[in-house]
Length: 184
Image 1 (cartoon, one colour):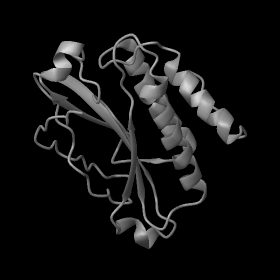
Image 2 (cartoon, rainbow, N blue to C red; image 1 turned 120 degrees about the horizontal axis):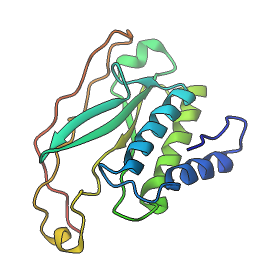
Image 3 (cartoon, helix red, strand yellow; image 1 turned 90 degrees about the horizontal axis):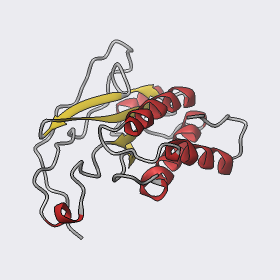
Image 4 (cartoon, rainbow, N blue to C red; image 1 turned 180 degrees about the vertical axis):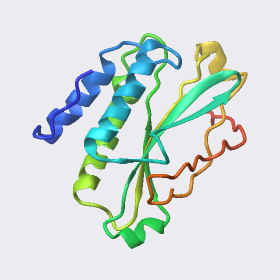
């Protein structure tokens, strides 16, 4: 997966991120494409200049015997004193259903979060902004039969507090109780 160059236009960066994420047809949880997307996003966070949340961008958790990893980075506030303020959250999910490139679900939204993050590192907001790419939005058992009656829902981390500015932080949010996905 090739990351866009900072000299690119906004449209070129957005297209490049979407194409990179869709290069592997399947980003289903546990697939090679899913692992490649996670690695690509961590690399993009670093290239953009985002700080990891804690020691790393990756926040692993488990549910139903399956391992998942949310990715979380911080775009610090313009004024360091404001970094203790409640952060804003910009997020998308990076997994897909089986055998789809996932451009509309959800590579386009990921590309937008990356572009917003890039801009926030150049023109910081008045308060810190968390950039998150969530895992397991598409259940690993996603089939038409399971949509009507999911058998389990993985837990997701609770809303974290901001880590200390020090790079020695080891803050990791604890998982929240499982909740079911709303039906549409």
